[in-house]
Amino acid sequence: MFSTKQVDNTWYFFNPDLLDEDVEHAFDIAYWRQRDAIIGSAQGRGTTWFVQGSKGAYALRHYRRGGLFGKVVKDHYLFSTLENTRAYQELETLNTLAQHGINVPRPVAAKIERSGLTYKADILIEKIDDAKDLVALLKTRELEANVLKKVGQEIRKMHDAQVNHTDLNIHNILVDTNNKVWIIDFDKCHPSNGDTWKNTNLERLKRSFKKEMNEEAPLRLPPNYWQYLLSGYSS
Image (cartoon, rainbow, N blue to C red):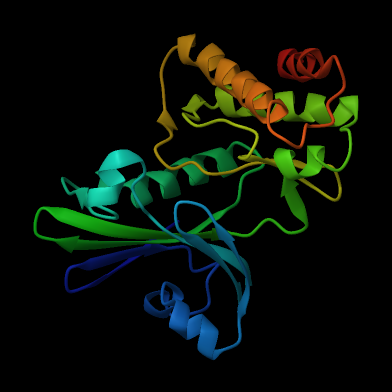
């Protein structure tokens, strides 16, 4: 599915069915700016740029470290093999989930630039249109029981595909205007054997709900929100 291109010490993996632009240009924000194709941005660990390509809208993200170590080494990672790089693994994980029918953004391309023993990386994925994360949504309205059940169902589908979302929280779950539920941000997520980690995923998500409910702008959650979610998961 993915084509490969190497230019000196840089490798590109891309899906030509989803990307018309030259993959080298696709990771250059100046290229998109010159074409007046930047349609938005979001701030997190760094800036995620939303750009409009000829075959669709994309989210362009540079990999950056978090935590205290990230203050010293911002975006370099130890290189072993291309298959072990974070960008390649996220591309493959998204591809696996999409093939299993889970609502995730389709992977478009990845860039890995090696420098000696380290590398830097970027990823380009499909932008989910007209969607908000659960935090933004629940600050404006209460979610219906059937939407919360859909959240549980989508998580169950991901778990049935044996993918461990190690950072499952309510910022990484989106709902679009058609009440379709999406799961995003699969950096450092990976296929896993067994089942014990699945409950850990769910507990992490539950803590995420509780954390946001303790913030200044409380979430508009129905009293039985977790039961609704679990009923969807069980179904």
